[in-house]
Image (cartoon, rainbow, N blue to C red; front, side):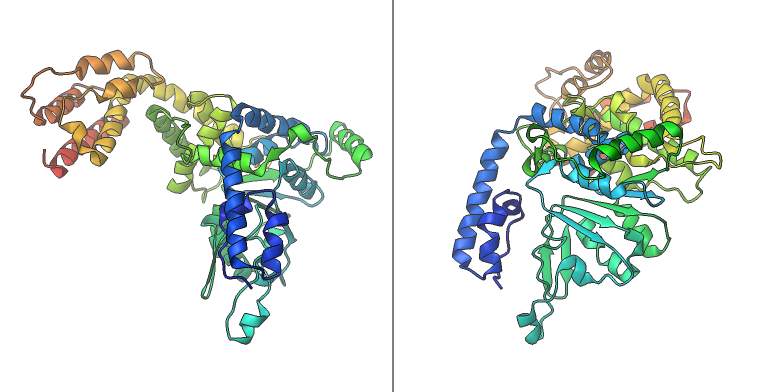
Length: 478
């Protein structure tokens, strides 16, 4: 077996299986394989340079409507799936049997051209070989444990893990590294997984330390409640009579190239230098206000509900995805309202009567927090921008050695238009040639001291901001 490590980027090219895979499977020339992989990577770079971003976004928005043609009542879950794909995260779907989870997943993946899909139905006897490939017999004879990973979950771009909870804990534990870090480690073997997104489905839940750790890797979660009203059942009949439960082949101009969704993911994660989606820092503050309040509200119904700092931070990618789907390169308050796709298990009933769902609780909580934010914005927003500046100053201390004019640029991106004038008045340029950098510290502390609020939360933030100012200036010895 060839020892050349295949670059992940080469596997994104739709011609990989035709040009490179035969060399790998037939133990061909290492030199030839490297040359072909480089050509495939060069082709990808040319493709990325020509991507029409608006066209990709239009097709992503189009998918949700198209899925309705084959699966009924999956609109919100489809929107959640699209956001999982855009951000390169995983999705978990839980429901009773017979609600077309497999059809939904296969139909969704059908819209992405050039993508390899790994599918498996887990059971108690499923082994790591079934997921990661069988052992290399020749190496095994030499005492080496080495998996032939071609065709496994490691070398495919999408994964459909059906009956997920039927897998034993030892097996599921082996998936942790692949799902989170995109890395497979077994003994002396280390492989970088090309997995973009996995969708796991289950008909029941079981709680162990392993399953809880794994579910944390699935940032997006949904519950499907079987609908048996006469209208819905008739719609299901109509769809079934048209396609017999088969995946509908998308029309050519609706298909999204794997490299296009990869480009979107890289754009959201700031890996595309030429384009940036910005999040005003006060939007992040509002997001955090809502996240903390929503966790508290959810604990009234689910005492073990928990939003980890990792989840709250990763929601920034969802904010940018929401903005992009709306045709914008700057996030605003409207995008925060759709964080329920990540913070909630969609369609999860919170009461016995099934009249209150988690996303509805989120909407109510978000509205209340937005009203609260509106009442404190005049006091809190300048403090937020000072914190943002100090964060940048810790990286680039030169910012503190000249008169502070930083906020002029920062405030231009604010969602509050009057912020610019207020901050420029306080931090306008100083023409004094003999400027003392310590004056910046004094100016910042005086500005903070003059902010008065009736809200304890604002005053706590004010005190921490003042302490942060002193800490930064002390640390960099100005």
